[in-house]
Image 1 (cartoon, helix red, strand yellow):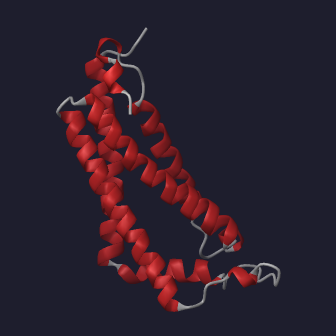
Image 2: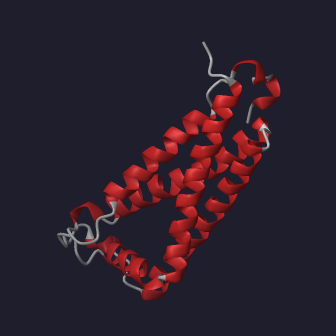
Length: 169
């Protein structure tokens, strides 16, 4: 039994819109309150609140210019992801399912790459963010990664009669 096409389309629209809204708010917050998460990125990259194991500290990036460049790149990525997801949401609302899936997939993958590869793998493991009591964003990153993954799965559920060969990514 498949999900009725209109129900699935509405679900995909609203869930994609939720991630788009989240990413837009994150990007807006980082732009309007630049200093707060700038400190987060600086501390994670500098590894100054980790166990300071000499076998790991060679990984630290202490140059503030490089730290700030990384932070600006994160903000740009968040902004582009929000825009792509906003466009995906608009396509879902127009019932242009093939394009909606494609653009929603692009945006959701951008979010999952940022939070999965960026924050969980690179920040959490490479820069040992898991060791910090003060600057550990792993729980939040995992929540966003899982949330985006669930939305990605919903976006790709079969929708009965509207599934056609042209719907593939």
